[in-house]
Structures are given as structure tokens and as C-alpha cells.
Length: 180
Image (cartoon, rainbow, N blue to C red; front, side):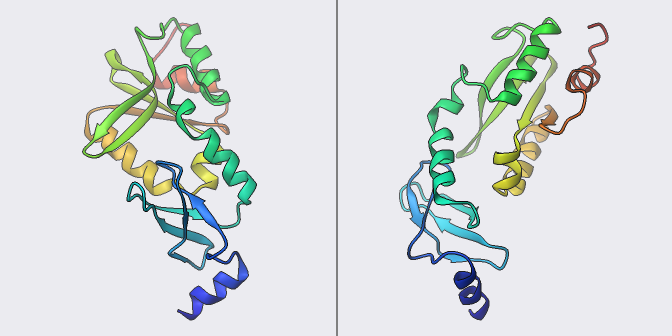
């Protein structure tokens, strides 16, 4: 308990700050904060357990919560990294809606995973992991579960990040695309 009180005083008082649920957006007080500065929450609305970094400002949280709501699950909404991948797929001759599908929901029991690009005929998935969502928000465990689920279902997973060098060549090699 001593560590909890110390970290609580170092960062943010849990009584004063609420954190948005990544699933439904409901703001919730943290149950506790660990030594690394992560707030652990249980959403009273949808019963989702989640953790979030306490070092991120409340204004940034509100911005991300708003951006991370419904529009990003639309097949018409592309992040900047997804737009680059879409353009490369189009240049390779893939046809959207025929050869690949953007933002596909895949059910794993009660959980639903959204994959950024699904190429059904090749049984491949391209995941575009932006820095904000996948590195700064501590989504490693969630991403591991998602990738394991996809691989367990016979899909090849190709992960690109904003740090991926020579994106076109990287995708060409992994998609086994020889002429471009």
C-alpha cells in the first residue's frame, strides 16, 4: 500500500481524474496506480478492465477518446499510416472491397478485433500500428492477444509502423509481390 500512496502523490490523485474506457468512452476513476504510473480501471458501464498512462494530459485523453470513437472503425476512415498502405496496395493492383478490405471486424468470443487491412484470398492481415495508439498507450498485451488470435486462425500478420523503412519494399516482400 505504501508504494500505491507514493505513486499516487507523484502523479495524479485518482479521486480527481477519470480515464476514458477504450471500449465505450465512459470516464472512470482508477482503482489503483502502479509504480510505473499506469492507472488501472474497471468500466462500470461495459465492465471492461483497462489500464492507461497517468502521465498523459487530460486534454490529450479527451482528444484521443473522441478520435478513437466510432469514426475510426469506419471503412472510410484512414489514419495517415493506413492511407500510405492503401496507396501502396492500390499501386500493386489490389482493388479495395474486392482484393482487400479495410477495417474488418473479427470476433473472438465476446471480443471483437478490428484489423486494418484484410486480404482474404491470400489469408493475410496488415496491421498499421501508429505510435500514439500502440506504443504510448501501452497496448502491447492487447496487441499480442490480437496477433495470436489471428495467427491461430491461419492468417499471416504483417505489421507496419510509422518507423518502417521503405514501406513499399517492405510490403512488396511480405506480400510476395514481385513486379511493381
